Image 1 (cartoon, one colour):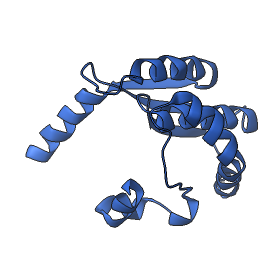
Image 2 (cartoon, rainbow, N blue to C red):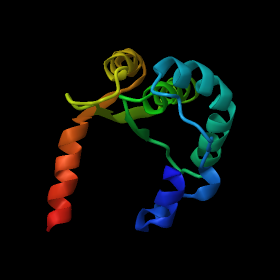
Image 3 (spheres, rainbow, N blue to C red):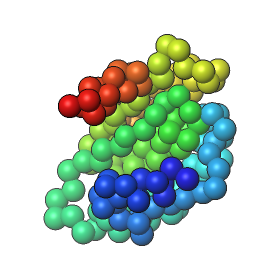
Length: 146
């Protein structure tokens, strides 16, 4: 899957494999499934994983979440995690880079997922750094061409 590919790539050394929470399936491009089903399913594991890492910090200042808003997992589960961080760590800032779907996105639910996510982001994020998916692809292609 995607996680295993990342772990085998040069980026793999950036991640602590013990902190990963995995499942065999995604949310099927459905915000509600990611937020309501997977959110409640993984809430305890996510909060515990974050707590263990936060306890190693001398002065925890912020959380930085990067997630896509077009599909169900990034939009639904991502915003659920953000809301849990707000509940568990109300005095710690929450920054998010939200990847918005492109105009030509082929997932019919992308606009709905994005709007439902935005509501959660407005409520629980201190700062939202938006980027459109095609713009991100163009940036990566320019960097890769050098």
